[in-house]
Structures are given as structure tokens and as C-alpha cells.
Image (tube, rainbow, N blue to C red; front, side, top):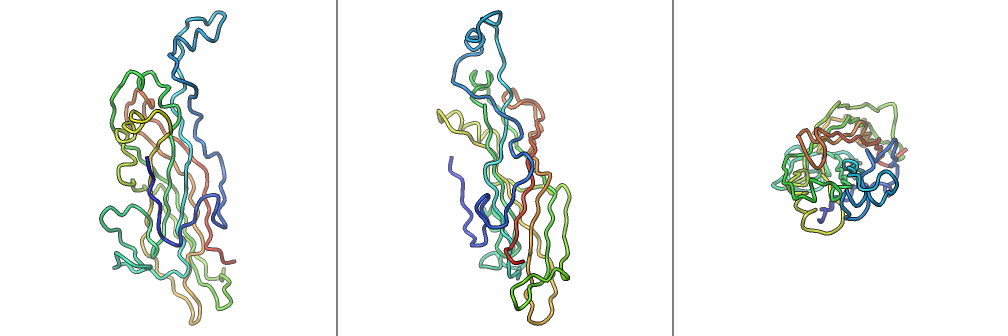
Length: 247
């Protein structure tokens, strides 16, 4: 399954972009591994008193795949624009943060799905994944010398912000179809946040700037009964910090 790439020049790639750090445990839970042996064969292979015993593989885990962010500098959002370098509005089938207002995208991958007995039995399921995070954006002014003036800094914080789904990439039946149509490879939900414009007033000669972005308590949930994923699952991820690059 292909994953769309963001085209904005301000896009900062995880583990590549300057100033990006990862904290905490990104992998929420280790998923089952191994070949396509049945549960009975796996138990027999264990030997001893476990020969022939039916074992159940661990429920699928989920790990972070990619985190990208836009931290605009200079910060000149246009709340009326649907196109261009200062756009803030999302157009039809626009599932990525905008260069004018900034934001981030996040994708994850499931593991151990094909090991589940219900998957091997051809069980059909549906439902959507959801994601939330605590988000802090730091704004202020950059002087003529290109240095961020920390005396002008202020934060905009939102708790439990609900992330938008990227197309049908958070649709479990859509992802499950990919698992059934391919012999290998893992897939998972994708989300994004596109921020609303913020007013940043600066002295003459200074440049409005979004200085930083911090995302914490990012979690993905599947609030449905599932024979493959396990009922009402929630996977937790680490902390992501991105800077615009000025001091």
C-alpha cells in the first residue's frame, strides 16, 4: 500500500529533520511474529508437555512508522487561501498540514495481524481507528539577526486534540483488505493535524515565527470489538518535538 508524501517544503521528516527528537517508547506493543504455521503446529513444535497444545499468538501490536511536521518560519498564514505557500484551508481530498498554518502527520504500522487465528479463518471486520494527542505550539518573533527572541515567545496548547484521518487509511476494513491481498508487509492507520491560524504581533523589522511544535500523549485507539485486533485497543506513542531551526 503506498503512502502519500507531503509536498510542502517546510515538511520535516522524522529522524531526518533538524531539531526533531523522539522520546519515550514508540512501539506500543510487540506484535506476534513467525510463519503461517497453525496454532496446533506451533504448540507441537514446543515439545515436552506442550506437544499438541493450542497456543494463541499475542494480539497485534502497533509501532510508529513516520512523523512529519510543518513549522512555518516566517509565519504568515492566510486563513482564506486554499492554494499557495500561505494556505491554511484544506481542499477536496487534502489530508496534510498546510504550509501557512502548519501541522503534522503521523502513520503507524500493525504487526502480527496474519498470525491471528481469526485472520487465517477469513473473518471480516470493519470500524475506524481514531487518534488524539496533546499539542503545544510556540510562537514569537525572529529579529533581524535571524535569532528567535524568546522574550516574545508564547504557547498555544490543546489537550486531547483529535487528529484527522488520512483518506481511508484509518478504516480497518480498508487496511484488512490490503493484508488479505498481499502475502507480506504491514499496514496501519495514518492521521494528520492542520492548525488554525494564530495572530503573532512583532515589532517593525522582526519576523513572525512558529518556533516549535511539541506533540505528547499521542495515542491510537480502536474502540470496537475485534476478533483480530482484540477488543477496544489503545496504543501509546512517544513525544515528538520539532523546531523551526532558529535559536
